[in-house]
Image (tube, rainbow, N blue to C red; front, side, top):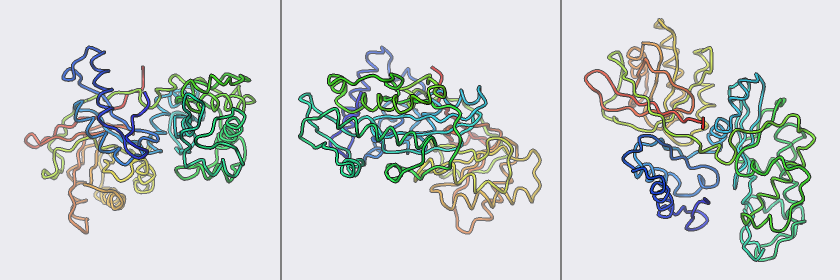
Length: 417
């Protein structure tokens, strides 16, 4: 269902709550019987002024759910996992680029042998232009007004649409997607469509499409009928057809996604409870804390001196929010190694709000927590726990201590249907 809005910048929470309540009623499942779930606000909706407030309120209404207002980088990562691109990349041992094309944005993730290399996003989507039942334009996104003007396309609010004009615009947007797949040189118009920074060039092995527009891609040489446009009252079907035709020379490189329209949201909070033992360090004053996103700087082998550099790149997915850093760490670290880890973590958290939260797999949390606390120039809350294994994209809840131990809930978004 399309997101109900009060105006162009405000989500209608009351109507969203009604939609969710009706869905729960139809499912014949009582709210107090739902133990897990996820509330994730994505795409254009995540840019609305009350997006964070809506996600929090909806989570409280539903219970102990994972909550995230996904910026473009996080949404790209979620879509890449949800579409199956990450899994296919690992199985094929190849590099796959997934383009998740929704209503207002295209979120791009690049996976190489199962590991995410890059994420970025552009203002390309199916609801950048909307029409009413009479065929008159009722909305044009400000983000593509420059294209309409520069290309001298006759598309105006209040004026009846002409398919030929929409097709010219959608062909241009489709060409931009070829460019971000490194199949053509990046032009200036495409650069203006980037929401995030641009990407590092790469060679693509396979391409997959997800999102609402992904449902329309693959119908090559299909002529768009006027009635098709009214199916959703937007440019989605035309954009899908144009992308299909622009990519038809690369059909051998296209992979079918496991999930398309539901790629980003197919998931639920899977709660796994662990207890972090007595050799830990924590500031009781800030507990309990909930729904803290976890970042893992390293995918495989850890180089302790790269914690800041790689952690900073991962933190960019979570804008203006508290995060926890997760490391395996040495099995029996020397004091020198602990000092290096502490120094890198302090440097990383200088740019991150909230307490310093460290999650370790190996057993040296208390020593690391003490070194971090003693090395800080200004007082700051520190939580350092160990014997816990996590993945990028997980969330953590940390409860009140039970004696010298702390209950921890790791919430993992699941992408298998």
